[in-house]
Length: 128
Image 1 (tube, rainbow, N blue to C red):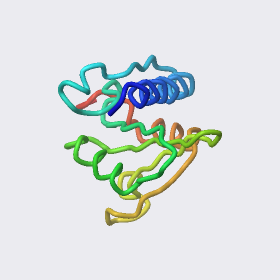
Image 2: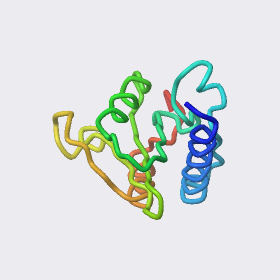
Image 3: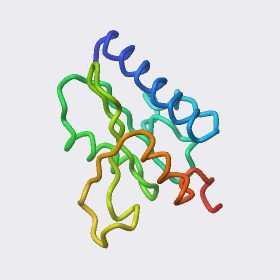
């Protein structure tokens, strides 16, 4: 990955985390050890494992697989955006108890995502 791609990715992560911080009332920061150790782009959301993508060419299937793999026992969430378009958040319907089987991915805007995080207590620390 080139320097410009890394910069664009970091800017995208900061943008999403600022939106979530404002709406959820918590200060969220990038996981700076993600490139060295792997893992989610933000590790401060308790049970949520957030993967952020800021790319023009969509590859939602591959990104979702990455989010699920990195999430482990946590709830995988994918946030993505193309230029001049709003952020889209993707969660599995089973994690919001809408359907009883995994694999039905829900796409939503940032406000809907934050409402779900708050309603389900996803921003609570593990074991909380």
